Image (cartoon, rainbow, N blue to C red; front, top):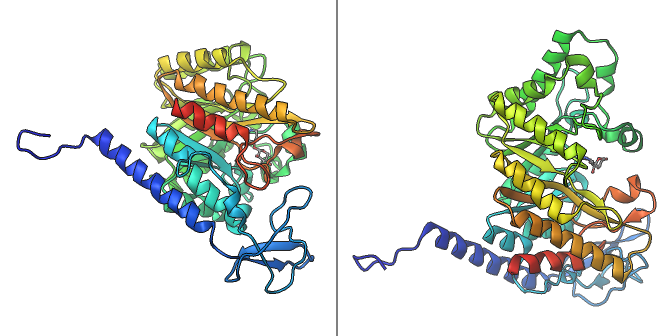
Length: 421
Ligand code: XIL
């Protein structure tokens, strides 16, 4: 109460009220959606698929892999139960988005355009649970700049537009990256475009190419994409700079140049360095730390560091080392994001392995929460239905927090619990 008798609500309190109201509305939305009728139809290949319709819900059964829309019979007029009701949340009305919001931390997922356009459950789960999105591939060099004189932003526009509608922040990924050869070979979408390799570019030409790329991409989303992974995976396991196209053509100064061009193109954007296998303590994370400290000392506009955290239940950094690393990076003044977390399981996803996975998700979050400048926890996808793991790590999978049918896994509840403590 103020002296004049008016009720004074602090900014923090009013933010909390808005978040709780939002949670309530989203919760009511979920319950209401459970009653929405879903028509069962066959697609061209004869496989059942589910789409919005006006029919009465009747029955539906799972097929072996739990895919959506696997109706036993599928005739016009026959309907499935609404599978959205599978997203039963243990705390009704509460979502990751709400609880992370209460801690003033973003929770994000890498997203692909195809399911965003074609899978309703993907969209509703994403908007309900997450407050940040990272385009998985749509902003990579090979996606937007496949031809030398032409940029294609069609896929990225879909994702950025979706994020704006649902009040989500976008992490732009990524401006400067040459993937490891194994990624390029197995996942061709990540390759740098062929035209870059058709000529032996002179130093000035290479600089012009990279400057034009960064200026055009960052400039297009100026004010809309608030965070950029400017340079991705520049450091080798032994701490030296990886031998990439950009190192060979420009030299080590390409890193500094990239940050400066990105800053010129959008002075308000937060600019990040992002890497893998440098999350805990060790040679690579020491080298990343030293690189960032040096860049900061030289006044390079760099605001944060991304820890990818692609790990497995058999191999992951000690959470206490991750906490120590986040803390020392915070002490440099950098914001720290977990940017690509997934916890893959080798072989069948037994109860024990799923519990172990949940523990790892929870302890990594706990590590972040224990530090000062932890700003976001982003997963590399959110449903096992669309994950890069089985394609890239043969025999592994089940790495995310929702299963293939969008049912929350133990890991999902573990995150909610950690945030509720
Ligand atoms: C992955 C994407 O998820 C896949 O869709 C793609 O085909 C292969 O690359 N480090 C990164 C990400 O920074 O961009 C990579 O993304 C995974 C490893």
